[in-house]
Length: 577
View 1 (tube, rainbow, N blue to C red):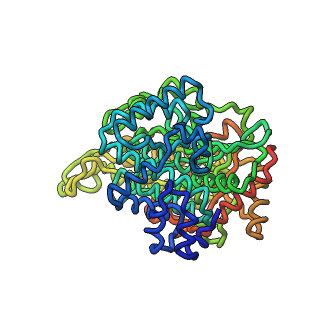
View 2 (tube, helix red, strand yellow):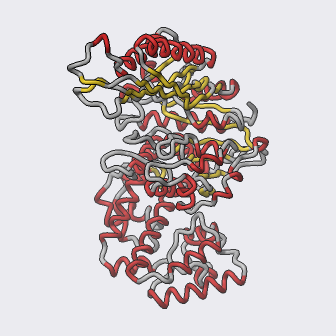
């Protein structure tokens, strides 16, 4: 491998020589981008090379396509292809075809070459012989212009995988670059939104899978859209699971959830390229849904893995009238395969999650990382207040049954009850006067309540007191009130052994004592706790710790520290919690 720093500083001639294997027999590609140095990272380097190809004339593009050997063609069978092509074809099983597969592939290759006058090009990483044959059979029916574009796109994918194995860059920079790449995929122009199984969500899943393949992981996408990558390990019977979610809230930040996917991918790739084998298999899961934005059914991805997926959720309906089952089928997934996603707890050593803190504690302590002690339990409810609407100018104050005024007093009751108890928080995040007008006394008001604590007893006592106070306010003000609980999740402790292991790794890497802190936000680890022991590593947020917001911030330096802590944790993990 060659470091990015060196690649940016060597002579143009050496730069071209170093990247000669990236685009098959086409040194003109690195030649054209050498003057554009320095490059910020592998992704930026790849984008520049791909742009050079797309900006080249058709004759150069055709020469590039024709420089690629036929898959399992005569040159490949003779071993007369580049070492990169040989390795790629072998990895896809094309060096060990059955006679029937070889005959079918060669026949399709001939049809393809006859039709387009260039060889079939496919980035075979992640493919099997059967999927290669199926793809070739489908693409031979394309028109020439379409297939020219597809071939160039596949060449670009091949180049990305080759660059990932050739160029070494700081892990923190790589993590930030991947997060930026994913943030370019959004349902909204100018804001990051990625809700479950939309076209944006599916494109994000495909890109995450490419990141995993570039790291050398065996990958697949399961029946609910989870993207799974496995780094093979030694003979230990149990594997370590890690990951987080890749869906987002509306107008989100770039790192919530996604850091816990991209950081393990970067570390796994670094371990593989260094030839370091863990004693156990490492399974990275990019959970498809945690936020509940589209179908209001949170933690769909991790619940499926933990064996807690409720089939009744398949009837949930989004704002457009599509059911969850409709969306899963439209994405090409098999509903009948969902139960099989559940992992066998006897085969899992633990689940660990890396996540931005989503708060200011680490920032205030001037620490890059910290150990999570537990995830707070929460109670969420919806309160509807029914009063009597009337003319704002004609109804005396003493005779009013103002739903909004009553709700305002109730909101203050939530704050008053939760304000002076450490470890307890209460939030009214949604407050509405349906159909309200400036000159009408509100006859109806609705608001949400979210109460959280690491102590279920403290949380439950607060919830009971608040409910009682709301009833008293309603009676005194002459309004009716309906209190509906929509979620009750117990607090989840992180395994003490995993907390201690994280702390030891932090101290080895940073040479500072590890700070231990609770998580007030919910995480996929809460669902995974029913399957296995859990542990969490928090990473410092910038901008005051803001999250679920475009100003969400993470530095490459902190991402790098967290990656080195994660790597140290994996290398020293002994499989016992």
